[in-house]
Amino acid sequence: GENVEQHPSTLSVQEGDSAVIKCTYSDSASNYFPWYKQELGKGPQLIIDIRSNVGEKKDQRIAVTLNKTAKHFSLHITETQPEDSAVYFCAAWDSNYQLIWGAGTKLIIKP
Amino acid sequence: EAGVAQSPRYKIIEKRQSVAFWCNPISGHATLYWYQQILGQGPKLLIQFQNNGVVDDSQLPKDRFSAERLKGVDSTLKIQPAKLEDSAVYLCASSLVGTGSNEQYFGPGTRLTVT
Image (cartoon, rainbow over all chains, first blue to last red; front, side, top):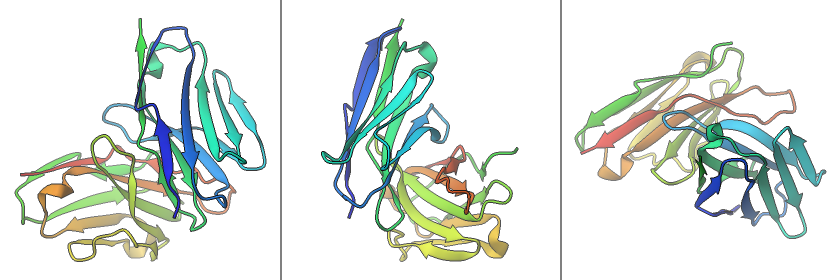
C-alpha cells in the first residue's frame, strides 16, 4: 500500500523567511496530493492541493510542487508570518481512494 | 455554513471502560470519515461511510471499535473495552461527493485519555 514520508519533523524559520517541507510517496498510481494545516486544538484544514497532471500550483504565499518521476512533492511558504506556526501534513490519495498521511512537520516562526 | 461538530471535546476513562463519540457532518456531505490521531503522528483512517453504508473499515479494530451512521447523517464511534493505546484524538471529517473535489472538512476532534 501507499507510504508517505515527510521531512523535517520540526522546522524553525525566522519571520519573513521561506519554509519548505518535503514529502515522498510510494504508490505510483497516486494522483492527488493535499496539504493540511493543523493548529493547536483544531482539526486539520486543507490549505492547498495538487493533482498529478500539473507540476506546480500557487496560492498567494503558498505553493506546492510535484515531481511524479521522483515521487515527491513539496510545500513552499514564502514571507512567513507568526500565524503560519502550526503542524503541516502532506497526504497522498492512494489507489484504494484512501488518504494516506505523512507524520507531520511542526513549523515554528521565530519573531 | 456550519462546520463538522463533534462531542465531547475531551474524555478521560479507565482501561476496560467504554466510550462513545458523536459527529455531525456538514449538511449535504455524503461521505463521513473517522480518524485516529496519536500524538505526533498523522491521522489514520478508521472507517469511511458513504451515506449510511460502510466504504472502508479495513483499519478499524473490530474486536473493540464499532461505528454507525444511521439515516446517513450523524455518526457515533464506540470503543468497548478501551485500552491504554487507544489514547488519541479522534477526528471526524466529511466531504461532498460529486464535485470533483476531494477536500475533507474536519471537526475539532475528541481527545481521549485512557488511564
